[in-house]
Each structure stands twice: as C-alpha cells, then as structure tokens.
Amino acid sequence: MVKNQSGKLLVDPRYKIANREAIIGIILAVINFIWWFAFAFGLGSKKVADYHYVMGLPAWFFYSCVVGFIVITILLIVAVKFLFKEIPLDDMPDQDRGDHK
Amino acid sequence: MNWSVVIPMILFIIVVFLVGIYASKATQRSDDFLQEYFLGSRQLGGFILAMTMVTTYGSASSFIGGPGVAYTVGLSWVLLAMSQVVTGYIVLTVLGKKFAIMARKIKAVTLIDFLRERYQSKWVVILSALSIIIFLFSSMAAQWVGGGRLIQSVTGLPYLSALFIFAISVLVYVIIGGFRAVAITDAIQGIVMFAGTLIILIGTIIAGGGVDNIISDLKAIDPGLITPYGPDHQFSAAYISSFWILVGVGVVGLPQVAVRAMSYKDSKAMHRALIIGTIVVGVVMLGMHLSGVFARAVMPDIKVGDKVMPLLAIKVLPAWVAGVVLSAPMAAIMSTVNALLLLVSSSIIKDVYLNYIKQNASHQRVKRLSMGITGIVGVLVLIMAIKPPDLLIWLNLFAFGGLEAAFIWPVVMGLYWKRGNAYGALTSIIVGVVSYICFSTFIPSPFGMHAIVMPVILSFFGYVAGSLLTKDVDVFQQNKIISKFWSV
Image 1 (tube, each protein chain N blue to C red):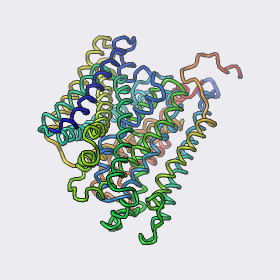
Image 2: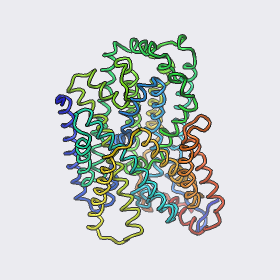
Image 3: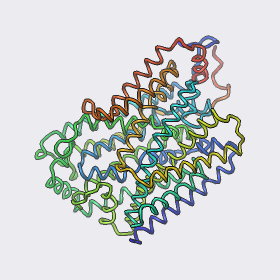
Image 4: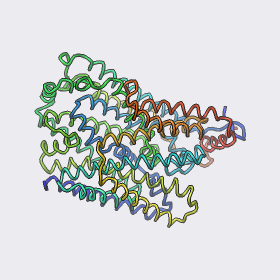
C-alpha cells in the first residue's frame, strides 16, 4: 500500500481511464501478433507447390499481411470510437472531485 | 541529368523549405520559448500528430534499405516489415494519456525532463542524455548518407554536392523553426510518402503484368521468394517474430517517438492520430516492401539493394511521376533527420546545459543557444556524413536497439509502477545498453532471435530487481515523487 504523509493517496481519477486504454492497446497488439503469426507460418509452411493463391498473392501472405492489417485497423477504429474516453489532459485545478474524504 | 525527374524533387524540397520557414513564425511569437521550440507548445492536432509520429519513425530504411532487402529475400521481408503496423497504435496507447497527463503535471518538454522528475537522479539524467546524444548522432549520420546518396543517384551530382543540398534544405528550417516547423513539414512529407507508395506499387504491378504474373515469375526465379522463410529457408519463425520487439512494440522506448506522445493538444487529437497513424504506417510498409519484392520480377538483375527503388521508379513510371515518387524517400529521410537533430540539441540544451551548467540563463541566451547548438550539431553530422560508413540499414538499427533497450522500461514502468525508482532505472539503462552491445557483437541471434530480445528482457528484470532491492533507501523521496505524479 502506498501512502503519503497525509495518509491515503488520492489517485488522479483520470489514470483509471488511461490504464484501461493502455490495456486495450496491448490486447490489440496481442491479437495482431497472433493473427499475423498464425496465418503466415500456419499456411506458409506448406510446400510451395501446394500453395493457394488469393488475388494473385500466396494465401498465407494475403491473410496474414493484407487481411490482418485491415482487421486490426477495423478493431482499432471500433475500440477508439466506443471504448476510448475524451478526458481533459491539462492539470486540473481543484474543482474536480476532491470532495470525498 | 534527368531533368524531368529532378524538377519535381526540387519543387518538393522548395515547398517543404518554405512551409518550414512559415511555421517558424510561431516560434517568434511564443512566450515560452523552450516549450514552443522543442515541443510546439503541445498544440498538435490529430492529423499532424499521426504524420509526425509515422514519418519520424519511418526512415530511409522503409523506403530504400527495406525494399532493397525485400528485393533479395522476397515476401518474408514484407511479412517482417508488417510487424511495424503495431507502432501505429502501441506508442499512443501504452504511453497514452497517462504520459500526456503526467508530462503536463511536471511541465516536461523532453523525455529526459520526465525521467528527471520521475526518478530525481542526476545519474539517470546524465546517462540518458549521453545515450540519446551518442546513439541518435550516429543514426542521424546514417540518414544523411542516405539522403546524399539518394540525391546523387537521381541527379548524378557528386556525393558531396548532393549531401550539401540535402543538409541545407533540412538545417535551415529546423534551426529557425523548431518542433512546430518539423511537425508541419512532417505532415507534408507524410502525404508524399503515402501517395508515393501507392503510385509505385500500382506502377510496378502494371509493369509486371499483374500480381498473378509477378508471383509466378518470382516462383520461377526462386520458390523461396514467396515463402515466409525466404530463399534457402534462411529465416526462422522466431527470427522474423523477434522483429516485433525491434521495430514493433520496442519503438515505445525511442525518445524521438516518445516525445511526440506528449505533444498533442487533447484527447480527440490522440484518438484521430491512432487511426490515421496506423493506416498510414500499414499502407506505407506494405506498399513499399511489396514493391521491392515485385521489382525482382520486373528487373531481375539489380546488384545493390539500395538502388532498387530509384531504378524501379525510373523504369516503371513516367519521368515526372518518378520524380514525385522519389521525393517520398527524400521526405522520409528529411523528416527523420529533422526530428533527431532537434532531439539531440534539446538534450544538450535542456537536459545538460540548463540542468547542470547554467540554471538561470536568460530567455535571449537560451534562444540563441538553442538555435546555435542545433546548427552546430547539424554541421558536425554533415562532416561525419562526408566520408560515409556503409550499410545504412544496420547502423540505423543498432542505434535503434540501443535506445529501445535503454529507455523502454524506465519510461513504461515509470508510468505504471509506483515503486519503480532511480536505482531500478539506472540498472535498466546500463543492463539494456551494455547487454545489447554484447549480444549484437558476440551472440547476434540467441535462441534464433534478433539480438534485441534478450536485452529488453534482461533490462526489465534489472529494473524490477533494482527497484525492489532499494525500496527502503529513500522512502521519503519516493513518496514525494508518487504524490507529485499520481495524486489528483
């Protein structure tokens, strides 16, 4: 437990939102990596003679790099539009909820 | 000289130059010179923020070195390059609003300002400033060489004159305009990079007779070119994946990128930048590297990787369009150099001079010194670049990894872990840099991965262990730091 001289620390309420958004970013990165890795090395490890092609590109590449990029962009847009909050960044004077003890 | 290629490039340079000078007017008006010169008074909107992040990060290697390698090893290198999509959103989410809020609480202008306040340690500041100055200086030199060579190969001018043209067109607006001029010119450069990428990709596909045709040509040259492992199975999955650290999430620790994460105006700007930045970085990386791969089918006999892009543009596009497209790597190099230059000079002025040499320097003096040092650093780099070291891409990557290993944990853990302290940060910086240099020299691919991976892991443990072992050393100061950074 972290305390300062005056007893319990009142953590800036905006940090809760900031922390949540950081975690969303990390989750996106993990999804991005798994998608990228699974299609590339899952489909790409076959013999070249057995490759399928989508729009002229080898299927592993198409799904991993082209579709993967589109999917992650869409997820990001959804996350930003629906999960990210607009909060003031400037140092707020004491008008905020410093009223609870 | 091929005038129809050269003229669009000259026009591009002139436009960037004029806009940079125009933007510098804000510097003259501002009341707080340091905030304005080194951070643009935290006024960046979403579009400019996205562009300045992408272009600062996307350098000569994205346009010249990278596609050159892709030409040789095929789609595996595009796969590797696509690990960079994550940079479009990870920096702004992980450092995120917390970094922006904390930086405002302590009025930080540089990354080191943040580290100094967060750790209250002279040694953290000195070590960080040193790593920034040394590493960024060398990576800047590599970029200048790239800029000089590019002008040389397009215009046929001697290297030295080419280098001078490049230097002057960057130096003037950075010196007088500072961060705002850099960010605004970055936005123009980003647009050129984006458009140039699309044009060259489409041009190459048409010249190669469609994607189907190109891929079967590549398969005929070497089937390895269309596998994720490269010709002769030369890359392992672990090796390619480890670039997610080096050029992906590790970018969070790069000072030139991190400092941009505290320059935006408000939450809305950050939200827009996340989306725009990710799209731009994805399109540019995919498009440029894919063009490099496809070039092999169009022109199979290029020996020097760095020449692939200039030759390709001139071959597959009408001359004046090639000029526009070749302005894209020019833009990438200029926009990286200008950011690095400003960061090195801010470390010298703000982090060393004002902290330890003369704390109460007058406004006028700071102003003159800032511009003066920026100029001197620029000229020094120019001199270094006259006799160029080879292997642009690797030199650049070395500086990259060193900075990432040094800064990633002191910054990230400093934001999210209250107990992190100066001893942890120092351990982390030292372990990171030293082990990165050792690994890349002696064991370049431990466990089949790139040398960056182990140092990043080791420096994490260094940070945690260092902080926990010394948690009772200065409880009073630590509590003061915590209440300054975390309290309402």
